[in-house]
Amino acid sequence: MPAYVIAEVSVTDPQGFERYRQLVPSTIAQYGGRYVVRGGKTETLEGTWNPARLVVLEFDSVERAREWWACEEYREAKELRQRTARTNLVIVEGA
Image (tube, rainbow, N blue to C red):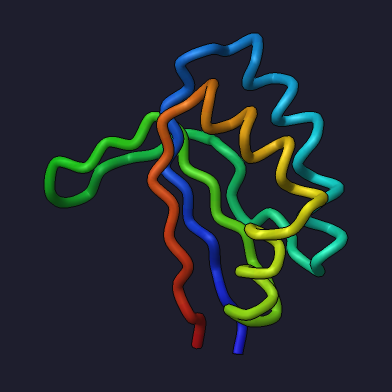
């Protein structure tokens, strides 16, 4: 069953975050993931949620998504993201 990593990202250090954006794609690909959404304009249809930046990644399974998030290859990029942005991150099972 596919799984999706959904991230709401508020960048606090654009220059530092740019380095993150360069590092992360290869780590996602190593674990069979792909970008479904990477930024882009959002429109609130209901409620008050208005994310500054939204990213959706697709993996083959929840296990594979967790492996990517915890892997050594992503460690440096993850630490950089945590220093340069505020992030809410979830994994959700697909249909």
